[in-house]
Image 1 (cartoon, rainbow, N blue to C red):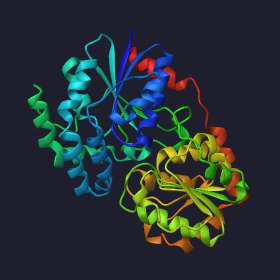
Image 2 (image 1 turned 135 degrees about the vertical axis):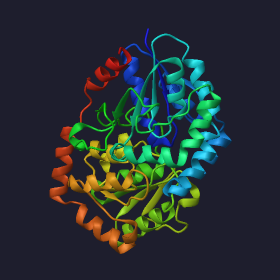
Image 3 (image 1 turned 90 degrees about the vertical axis):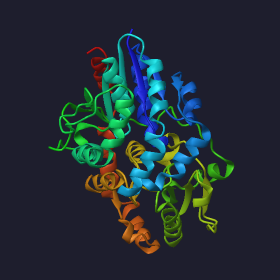
Image 4 (image 1 turned 120 degrees about the vertical axis):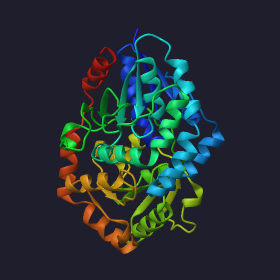
Length: 391
């Protein structure tokens, strides 16, 4: 019997690919264990996925609140110290507890996979690195340099404590994965020289069957109106540096163009205090069920929202900042399915003008329909995963 141990950290968008991978592996009769934050236990249980964790609700709340640290190089190091290296012992112990079976393969999220590489090397297991976005592949060599120049002492300290030799040749990849899986289709990004070898694009992994949020009466009434008038505003589930500005300017822009909107934000402190009567709010919504009912979506450039909008043929206005979001926004604009504005242009008039250019634009609608036809769920993902676990 094959066993897959999946390891990841992050917010809801980071977990979707792992839930989808887990389900695909289960369909191939592979035993699956997902190790991640405690807050996702209920979702794993509902999906029938065995679950384990290393943190507490309080530790996960601190993880979320420190999200803005990830928007700068200096902040990334602080975040790593607080939430990666301080927990690495507990993560290794959790992995060890589930890797004592025969035929185990570890799947771990790229950039947060120190524990996975140590356990895989100690136990001579196959180890697969999951790259959620194209920018992770494009920046792969930069990440290697960051590890060598900034994180080397921290990583090697953990390795030595666990009886592993220190890494001396970072370019050679002493702790490199056996394979890399990119969560995008081949047509979405041409391979670059900076990508890791053995990278296999496995297609977009969408949130179907994962979301559980319900619709309030106010939301249902808003959705019952003319879909050509309704805009969705969502900045994802994480906290990031310009999140408050994002929600405020997006809401004001909808007022300028006289568009009703639904603003989705799980963090009450980020919701603008004085919203017009045409804008209602929700902490979460089942986007897989309702995204197609909007004239456009204003979002932060997160991969999960991008892919859901693609599946729903919904034009996208992207206000990106940090992480993979700028790269996602650029690709959305190049595909003709949306527009993007840099943070320096985030004003209500600018966003309003972009909405006017986007909504009911026949060229954009045609591009959205064309992209939707290129996205499909195929057996390819299961075939790739099965070939890896059997290798």
